[in-house]
Image (cartoon, rainbow, N blue to C red; front, side, top):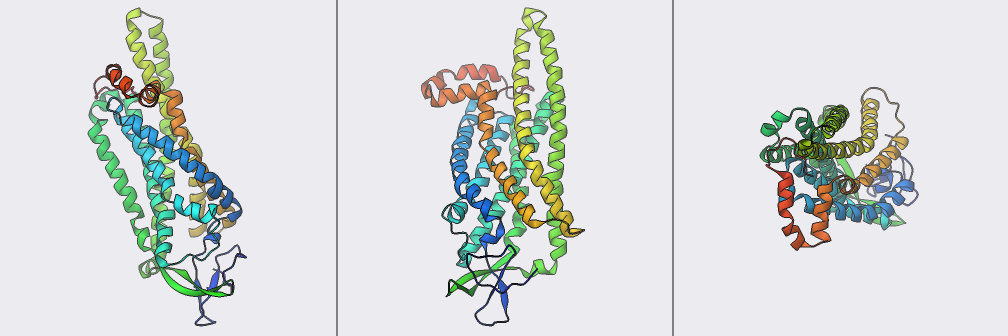
Amino acid sequence: MEDFNCTLSTNLTSHPCEIENNYSSHYHVLYMNITEEMPISYAVPLYGYIVPFLLVITIVANTLIVVVLSKRHMRTPTNVVLMAMALCDMFTLLVPSPWLIYMYTFGNHYKPLWPVSLCYAWNVMHEIIPNMFHTASIWLTLALAVQRYIYVCHAPMARKLCTLNNVYRCLIIILLVAALHQGSRFFEIKFETVNATWHNETVHVCSRRRTSWVKAYENIYFITYFTFRVFFVHLIPCVALVILNVLLFRALRQAQKRRDILLSSKKNQKTECKKLRDSNCTTLMLIVVVSVFLIVEVPLAVVTILHIVSSSLIEFLNYDVANTLILFTNFFIILSYPINFAIYCGMSRQFRETFKDLFIKGPVNARNGSSRYSIVNGPRTCTNETVL
């Protein structure tokens, strides 16, 4: 790391900067500098002005998803996973939003951050907890695709594997592992109070240091952590989702051909045709959900892999460019959060009907229409699980 003699000001270099400690002109410490963490020229308009609007839209949209999918007649294994995804996506954005608004909307990113408790709060709320929920959302998306693949391609197994109890167990395991894989990050950095010169005044700032146990095993720790993230959070889920999407699309085309044959045959096959149509609509909708996920996640996975290779094997990555790419990929991930609500409304008749009964026609009509939903849904162990 390059050393710079500088004081805290709005004029900052493009590299991690050090400030001079007042007690010694020869002693330098790293300070908490939000401006240096990402390209401010892009971060301010994206995170400061656009993200607050996306936050409101995401909270409203994902809350509506949870309300609709939590209704008794909508409670199926697929819908439970979709509901968990909506909550994880919402918390991924909601937890860091106070800091994004404070730093970028109100323009405080250049100011010294202090006391130490606030520096810890920034680190936890801006980095660790959002990573935890985002990781859980990635694994939930994979679980959703695997579950739908079992329903469509291995229907007899669905009665045994794709039950509500098994789904709840899977959700708990995913959330626990996502939390555990971020657990060490709560203890990898320590913050201390130091004095610095800022606008010709002596002020308190946070000094950021790696803890002693991280320093002792620095290479092992970071290689292990990032290797885990590359393989189990980015690479394997994305590759698996691409494969599952292709298999689901192939199964969807075969099911559509079968439905066309049934439509051209006897009239008493209409019930079977309707079941196939509903199943195909659900499969197509989940293919679209997974495709949107892949479009925004694959670029982040590529940048993360390049960072690992550049850090561990041969240095070739321009980190000014990499930080800009990460900023934009994160922004597009945030932009994708409210899209699922539009997908459900546009592609799921059942979701639209439940939404209308809850928020347009009123709760009385929703209660009166509940029998209709239970007829469509059928037994909870139905292998088609077409309701969504």
